[in-house]
Image (tube, rainbow, N blue to C red; front, side, top):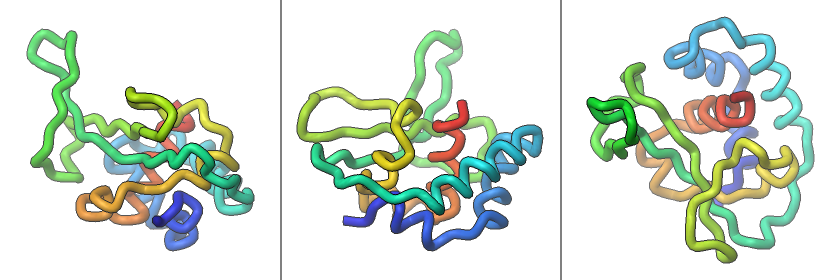
Length: 133
């Protein structure tokens, strides 16, 4: 399977930042550039738990108290939120990747269906946002 490291090696900062700007603006761009650089230069760890990450498009319900997963969406719709989740062989629930160490994250597999909806640059832009936020 394709790892996050494989994906980031298929990108450059310009295309990732262009995707980032669509959803988050340029306020955090220098910090994002630093994270991108660290990810590009870090070695990946072996994925012992078979962690697979995927991106969900979500929107709050009308009351604002519950997230609704949207299956049919426009990637450039900046009213949507995108959540990167992980699942593995050790736990039945979903993980947030935000607390992952960079080396560990780079070894995670990317769900093949994610490539049907997102480009490599879009995937990395969303990964970086989860790490930053």
